[in-house]
Length: 425
Image (tube, rainbow, N blue to C red; front, top):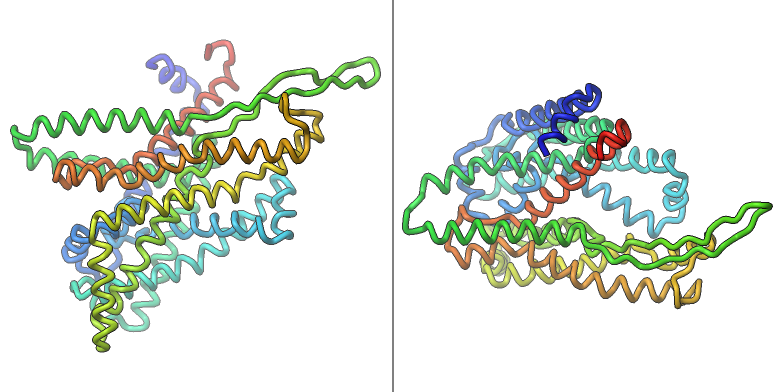
C-alpha cells in the first residue's frame, strides 16, 4: 500500500491532479461555513437536533443546511435535475436520440441539466426559507422582498458554484466530482461525532462502544461486498469468417450488478419521507382547527420511529425495483448481443434471451433492494439497540462513502496502469 502512495507521488501529473481535487474540496468545506445573513444559528442548530428528518437532509448537504450557509442546498438540485433527465430519456424519443449520439449527445444532456438546476435551486431555496421562517423557532425574522430575493439568489449561486467545482474535479479523472463533494461533506461530520462521543464517555458504556465498532466493521465489509457483487452471465460469440480471417469464437460474460440502482432509490425515498411532515409544518399553526389538528397528527406520526423506519424501508425497496426497471433494458441488451453474434449458452437469441435476462435481474434485485432498505434504516435500529444518539452508523452515508472510495481508487489505479503498466504490477 505504501508503495502505491510513493508511486502516485512520483508521477507529477497525477500528483498535481490529486492536490487540485483536495484544494477544491477544501474550498467546498470553507463555503459550507459561510452563513447567509439574517439567521439565528443557535436556534437553527437546536431545530435540526430535534428533527431527525431534517438531519437526514443535512447529510446530503454536508452540514451546509444546518449552518444555513451559501451552499446549504449542496448539489441536491443538480442531482434532482440529473434524475429527471434520466427518466425523461425513457419517455421522450427526442431525448433518447440525443443520448445515443455519444459524447456530443451526453454534453447536450448535461447542458440541459445545468439549465434545469437553476430554477430547481431557486424553488428549493424559497421553500426552505419559508419553512424555517414559519417553524416558530425564531430562526428567520421577517424578510423584505429585497432581502428574500437576495437570499434566494445567493443560495442558488452557491449551488451553481458547487456544480462548477464538481465538474472541475471530474475533468481531472480522479473520481466523480459531485460524488466527491457529497463524500467530503459526510466525512467532515465524523470529527464532531467522535468528539461528542468522547465528551460523554462513560466507562460503563465500553461494551456498547466495542459492539458498535464491531457492527461498523461488519457493515463496511457488507457494503463493499454488495457494492462489488455481480452475477456473471456466460456469453459466447459465434465464429465468423471474413476473407482469410476468422473472428469471434470467444467466451466471455455479461456482468449484472446486485445493486444496479446505487443510492438513487434512497434519494427518492428520502424525498418522499421528508415531504409530508415538512408540508404539515406549514399548516400546524393554521387558523382552521381541523387542518391544524391534521397537520399535528402527521408530524407526530412521522416522529414515530417504527412507522418512519417501516415506511422508509418499503419505499427504498420499491424505488430500487422502479429505478432498475428504468435503467436496465433486457430487450435492448438481447438485440445488441444478437447483432454482435453473441448468445447465452442454452438460451435462444432474441426474445428468449430478453426474458432470461429479466428473470435473472428480478432475482438478484431482491437482494440489492433488501440490502439498500436495511442500510437506510440502520441508524434507527442502532438507536433503538444502543439508546445513543452519537453512536449511530449513517447507513446511507456509509454506502455513499464506500462507493465513492471504490470508484476513486479504481480511477487512480487505471491512471497508474496507463502510465506504467509493468511497474504497477
